[in-house]
Length: 129
Image (cartoon, rainbow, N blue to C red; front, side, top):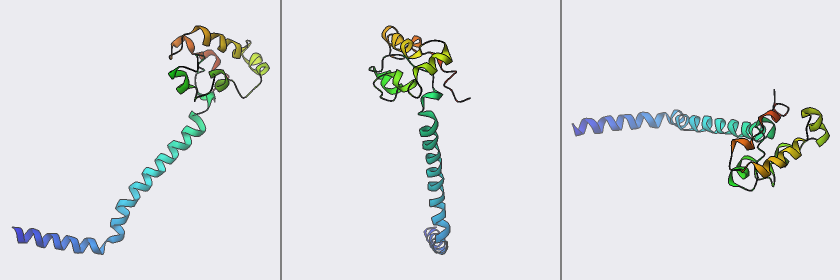
């Protein structure tokens, strides 16, 4: 049995030596596909998910652990969610001063991801639709 196994091993080894390019492709292609998928995931996260306009505005304090994570480390969540336009544009869109409302909510909601800290009614005007 040992001689047959050894002969089969040598046969396969000589066959694999002739197929170096095929063996290299068997290793390289999955690595390239994985790299491509990770690259696309990174681009989607950077371009779309890291932007405040695709997230529900969180008006809790930014100094607790949840606020730091959800508001990408900004000093206040108001800066993160309501930074691109002037206050007058937000007042025209929502018929209220959302920046001041968000600051008031941050003082009263308790933070730590509490549901009352989120303002989904203000997300409609910010979302990509």
